Image (cartoon, rainbow, N blue to C red; front, side, top):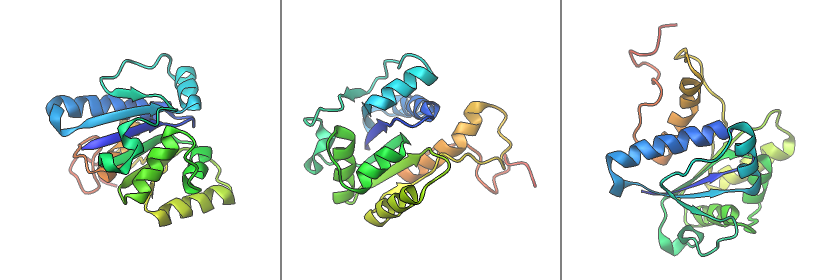
Length: 192
């Protein structure tokens, strides 16, 4: 799988960090099975540094926000999927209206026009009518809006376990097998 990971400027950099750390582990199992292209929005980089600190040197190719020579800027390169995590409502609006003025917007536009998987992990509360209408627009265009809304039925005991209730679903949407969080009906889920 060729996967674009875009780190947007919403609060919630821990979701992006946890996803990237998980992708490192998945790729270590089978390096040929997963290729990751990484791009940060300007705000995404700033929010990460504010919330977490320095961005680690991940073993993925990192592309600049203005690098339209990145392979996933064209549908002919055949990248399979993209996730924007966290996705700000400003990023959501640009994607919903086809604004391709940076690499994240262009890559999302490519995923939509090529009918490939685009997952937007929106992190905002409360939502305005504009946000909801933009979610409707991208959903109609083929994207998956997956709010960063953790679940609690597995009784997560750590922050990472709580994050994994969202990231397991992100990986499911991308078609990447994982066991990050217990699934409903699984014996690991405490009975209600």
